[in-house]
Image (tube, rainbow, N blue to C red; front, side):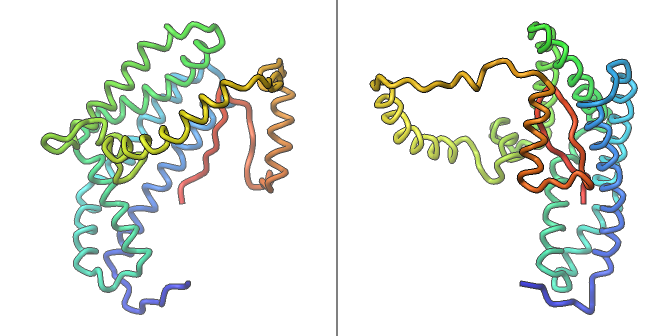
Length: 249
C-alpha cells in the first residue's frame, strides 16, 4: 500500500537524507574495494587495499557519529508527525547504527577494518596450504576486537554475546535462542536416531567429488541465469568462499 504524500515534509529529515547519501557513497566505495579484494585484486595489492578500506571506514564513522547527524535525529523525533512510516523506520535504523558505533574509538574502528581486509588474503593462503594455524592469530585478533566493541555498548550486567547477537538477530538473546533450539532439538534428535537405525545408504559422492574451478564457475553461472540474475547489472567472479554483495541504497 502506498503511503500518503506528506506536503509538509520534515526539513530535518531532508537534511538527514543528505548525510545518509554521503554515508552511502562511502559504504559503496568500501563494498567495491572489499569485492575486489575477495576476487580479482592481486595479492600484492592487499596492504594498499586494506589501508584504503580503513580510511573509508573512518569517514563512514565520522558521518554517522558526527554532531550533524545526532542533531538531525533529535530534530526528526520532534517532527515525527511530519514523517511517513518509512521515514520513521529510517530514523530508527540510523539511531540504532549510531548507538552501535558511537562508543568505538575512531582509530580502533579503522584498524579493525584494515585487519579484516588483510584477513581475506591470509585466510585464502591458509586454506590453500591447509595450514589453519596461519590464520589463527588473525582470527583471535578479530574476535578480540568484536568483544571490545561489544563491551563499549553493553549495559550493566549484560553479556557480551547477547550484545553481539543483536547485530544479527535483532531483539534475540541467548535466553530466547536457547528456548528456540530446545524445541528444534526435541524434534530433530529423535529423527536423527531413527535415521541412524536404517540400513539404506545414499550416494552422496557428488558432494565431494573433484570439480575444477572452471566447472564450478560454469555451474554457478548456470544457476545465476536460471534464477534471473541480470549480468548486465551485476558480475560474477571466483572467490575463496561464495558470497553476494551490492552497493548501498
